[in-house]
Picture (cartoon, one colour):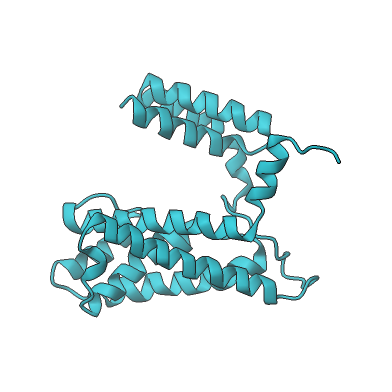
Amino acid sequence: MEKKTFSEKFDAFMMKDTTFILLVMGAAAAIFAGTYMFITLGTGAFNDLSIVAMLKDGMDGGDYAAAAGFAAGFLIARVLEGPLVGLMDIGGTLQTGVGIGIPALFLSMGWEFPFSNFFVALFVGAVIGLVMGGVIILIRKLVPDGVAVGGTSIMMGAGNAIGRYLAPLIVVAATQYNVYAGIGSIVGAAIFYKWGKEMTGGAILGAMILGGIFL
């Protein structure tokens, strides 16, 4: 029996349904905790300023209806769309839905426990991610093979083919920020290129890791 290489084992692990759910849980936990930080400290939300402003309006004594309705609509649409088109839109599903819609819904109902502290927010976000990931996998399993809606394979990432050409711009921007982020982006892009993946993701991750360590 031929022994699999580390790369083959890693690819097999990443293609598992359970791995997808774990990734969604981690992302949802981080984004929900980011919203907790915004509510308590005024910074940390993972979203556009215009969408965050909807949540802030409710926090300032206004109405949470706009934030809850707008973002929850994005969440439902993207969860249903993901298994069908083969793409999970992180911006619409997680950043907007989990980061703005669900917190606005909780706050509108007076549920303050999810925002009682950072670790509770992480846990609540992870539970939300578990439910979302499970629903997406369930829909994927129920969709018959061969349905002409773009495939049923799940893929996470930028839904725009032009994104693959952004790596050099990210390297330049990271280098302008500081030398460590620049080095990290170059190394990350090189690793992803050698790995056969999109260089843009490697450049972003490398810049974040080294930039965060040597900030």
